[in-house]
Length: 165
Image (cartoon, rainbow, N blue to C red; front, side):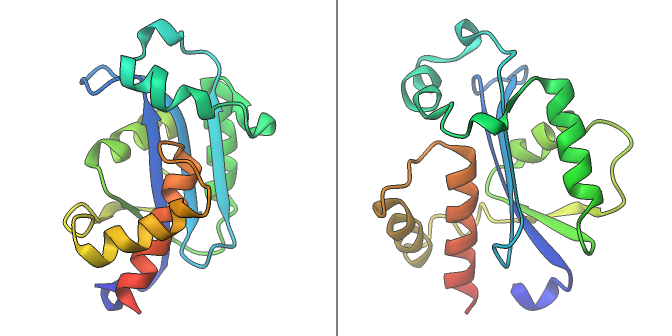
């Protein structure tokens, strides 16, 4: 799979209010395949009462660990566009949930940046393999929290690299 990708890969993860079509984005992370570039932002303008019980219990307790990442949607969009525009080359987005791409699209707004390929690298078929799960578990066993977009994106990167090397 890695041989077909000739440009940078950005591993994407998001956290959102609930598993419904009208979910609000809570946080978004992108991590480059070489680990040198990272973007992380979490929103402070979404009322927690919109969040599912799971999100209130498992996601929101991780918020605030990166104070510089806290912003509203308008600032998130500006920061995200600046990050993407500064990429040294075009990038393919890799994620394990197609809804993450929808949330990235809503966060970045129109027009879609030329630096990001519209086609994503789907990881959802890989994430159930034993090797993938072991690589992610190794990352999380080092004390990194699950259900935190930045750590989940880093774990995707680690598992992908372990799988393709």
